[in-house]
Length: 124
Image (cartoon, rainbow, N blue to C red; front, side, top):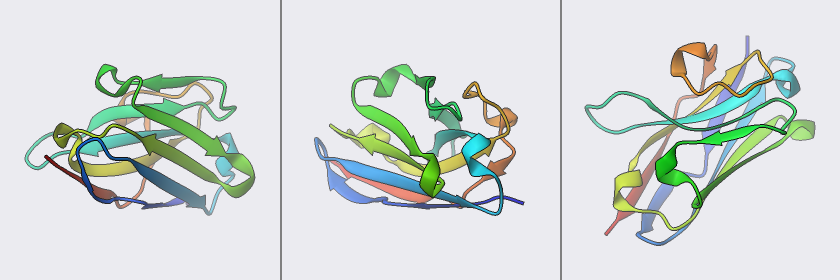
């Protein structure tokens, strides 16, 4: 069983930055693809970014391209989401997810493990 713990959320003004972290334990995390998803109140969980277990492949939803960067540190079983130039519409709970694959899935149903989420609030 893999456990994922996110951190780094908070309240920031529009234009500011946050760096989300997700640490995995309980499994061979270096062989997981990792993803970030967000869920706004009353809405479905949506894809933000993913990275293959090798780190070679990464994907982003169009709305965050050029602003967010995903990275991973397999030696420390961690994945990060650097979020710059944040906008009020980025406000949501952000979830880290892990999947036994090497291609970085972009669909929530493909992920096997989920963290508890971390709140990101961007004020205008």
